[in-house]
Image (cartoon, rainbow, N blue to C red; front, side, top):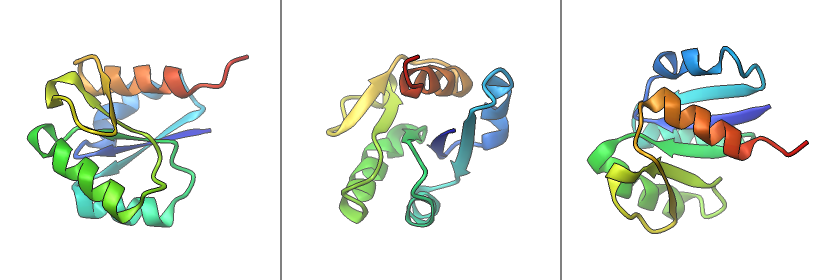
Length: 108
């Protein structure tokens, strides 16, 4: 099971992308505080997808400060270059989440 935490995104908006991927779970965090709480409670999270637009750099910084061992962070290219964050091609959130799930899928 791959678990993606979408920050400032609604899980309901992303759910249609995963009807074909039963091994992917998407958790949603409405803001950075919610994301930090979910990261602290759930060590199964494999990646964090920052969908907060202009808030993405601050969210990335806060996650790294609060949890240096956090899973990899991803954001759309439109968020700009953010230290420690891997850029994804700009697309609808569900398309980015599906691309991220493919990246995280183990080979085989």
